[in-house]
Length: 265
Length: 284
Image (cartoon, rainbow over all chains, first blue to last red; front, side):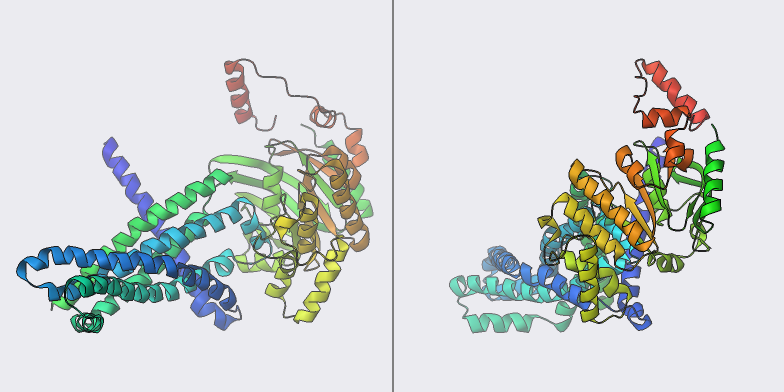
């Protein structure tokens, strides 16, 4: 009895949490697509500066990480493939696994660490120092002012970063291909492109947009629900990272399954 | 509990200042199951400075947050500019909020913006004024609070007193009819705190604004107040002019004004009994 009520409680809490995230997302969507036509202008300036922070600022570290991931993928694939003398398929393996799965996922996880946590910390601190209250007493909606520009920035930048990550991963694989598997740079890139279907890339990009929405919703929600005191900001930030990683993987699973069954027929 | 003072205070003011700015009727506010304010009644007159006094945990900050619409009352009415803000839509509340200004305890200036951007924010959000006009208003507001020339400073570069002044400038940006202050002298040294008191007095004289100040600083309260409300454990203990408060014989008022400590609770059982007493007779 105790156990069932506990499980029931957790499920209700989880659904309530998802409901709160959805509500935040819907309000941000309203301020992005509807409110501009009702005389509440879109905050493009804030969205652009946010995009610079989350997107452009992430490029160096993202390039390095995904280059290494591409290299690792090539090594792992070659470990099996060389037994069959099929080293030329290294390019295929790297290209498909980068674009379909690891490009979007690694990008999302890096962005959670850099930006999702920063959203929670920034909004959480503003909550603790009464800045969110100040916005409300000035009749400025915090979701309009703070959250919506972040949604716009993330939904634009995450697919861009993912495309960059895919390319860097393929480049990482090419380093292995050229040095260990008799590829030339041109031939490696060519066989990578040959291995890819357009839908490999688009499914990855669709996923990355969903990841962007998830990360922003969780980061901002955690920030806005921060309790009193500096210690709570730390808690919110930690929760934002952990919950985002979990939800991104969950969204990944759902969409991967969806694409799998959609393309089967 | 005596309501004599309340009645007296209201009568006195009815003779001199007939226009009621804010009127509270049986206002109750709860956080979850815990009721913080147990039925608050009083009026705030146009152009007066009302100081809400009370100890820590008395509910005075909750009262202030409810008055500016940050907390929703569980029951009761708050009449402000002819509207019951306890029961209006958020759009209507936003319209009212454009006519009130609030200075928060820590200033609550946006750390990522300069002082000038902070003060200009409400104007940029709610008006279609040209940048040059906003610039002029900004200079004027900073001048009023004694911060001329600081528009390009970041809030982090300002001292505590200057932050508070900048917050007042931001609260004044939209030319509010009512100005709210949460603990204006908290965390400031006596000289800087006196400066903030002086600023409040100047605003009162210059603009005849209705000013509501929440504080527990007695010296500052008696300096700036026209009338005072003493809140204790979520109820109004006394209300009246500064003289009426000084001469009050109400034990709770005397205890607060004469700064007499609560009797120490030695036994765990006594403490529990005290809590249950409070629960049965809230505010006793």
